[in-house]
Length: 159
Image 1 (cartoon, rainbow, N blue to C red):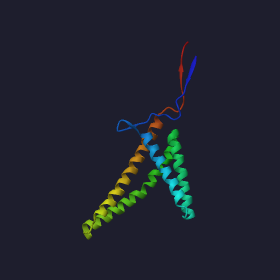
Image 2 (tube, rainbow, N blue to C red):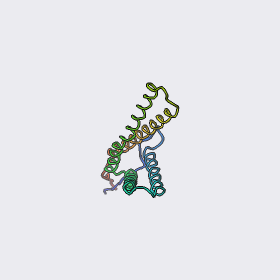
Image 3 (cartoon, rainbow, N blue to C red):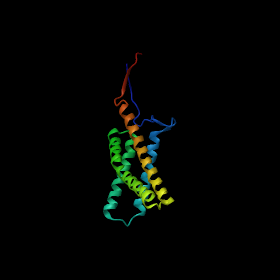
Image 4 (cartoon, helix red, strand yellow):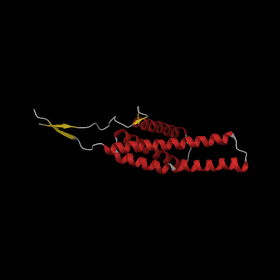
């Protein structure tokens, strides 16, 4: 007799961060926080330009679809989220470079750097590293999802 064994759609198996915290949970938590922040921004910023409003709604739809993709482990949508995140990484990288140039200019040329300049630089550095770390976690989940079996497994039992 043939026994049909399926794997659950939303597997809780995930690579672990620091040996104990599931990466999938961390990614979903970050995405959920982003969704809440975007909803709040839409709700409290009602007097914005129409194009900005449309862009924010599209970003919210993309974030929600990414959340669903990572929750259900839909490989294609996870990959799209990863590549879009890599492209959007350009913005914090450019801001980081601008702050670095500004700080170096104030330190070595003008010699009037303040602690506020250093704090601003540290903030953007932390944001850049957090974004890179988030993208790395997404990549780990994509790699694990690709390595899993897509088709159900069949086992033959003799009774």
